Length: 382
Length: 110
Image (cartoon, rainbow over all chains, first blue to last red):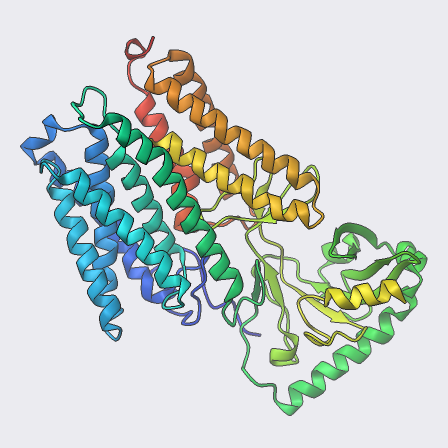
């Protein structure tokens, strides 16, 4: 059984390094983790540096705030040079960005500070969006944290402070009211589209993390997968009549793309592990003729605990993460890159699961994360 | 400014619900619209604070305390919520920063 390769934060860098293939937006890419530590370290240093500057008394709090945030963003960029030495252009851009941010975080008394800071921040944000759009990098937690710092810093740079003598006050408000929302929207939508369109090997689709396995199934794993399929199919065939499933304790949950997962809470609570005779869930296609059995679902009891994987890459479990669920309406959406859910929805993960599709699923096979919606439509038409 | 940033993040959360509403999660439409209204309300509170209105300050404090309490609860309970740095910045650091900055003497507001 392979463990999940990656973790969140607050763990030593050496632990974060274990997941070399983790680079999607809700993970910390191992080569970016050092940036996170540098950014956190820069916060107290920037605060001390500002306190030591006599010129701080003459400037607005928003300017000081922007200076601190730029110092943190600069530290993140500079730290990333060490892990991007093999990419000279990227390393050079990190150096230019980092040095620019650090210099500007100290030069807040400079006459052209706002213009220079706003220019650098906007250029960096747009540059990053282009960088990931053309596939030169993938968004991860460190990059997103840096972008959030930069967006906030840009707002603080642009906002006219109380009592400040500003020549073009209305222009500053106009730029703040247009540029900041526009940049936030562009950055968020690009990051999201890139992440959904180019998931890595561990992320089969939005919100689902696959169990780490070997790349190619061995003959033994192929045989084990076939055995699991055969055992499960024959064990659940009685449930083709949904009344039998109901009598056994399965109850329908939410409708997902024309199919419904019926869950047996007793089996979930009991914690049976991949028992073909006691699958935690059954999946029915919702047709005009009534529910049609299309598969079974095994589910582990605890989040992050992947089940046994007899078929290697053929039977990899998956865990749904960063799902925004409304506890009242039992409907879902996905968490945004900047970690927000719609009002009334909470961010959750679902413990690992493995589907066994007993109908032909040409796009992903019998153990795919999802059933092809066209298959469900065809069953409905039949 | 921080309230404006928070309003932007809620706007994005509201917009993000709309594709799911189109895909059949109909109640998500309501939650998305509620998020957009919350974003609008936050913007209005930011304007009120800019105008030094004490009522706006009070409501903003209540909103931030509610957000912070909800976020900390979500981080504490074992439902698999995201514990990444961005989640901490957006849901904890941002409300804390607003609360700290709004703890100015009441006399500064009218």
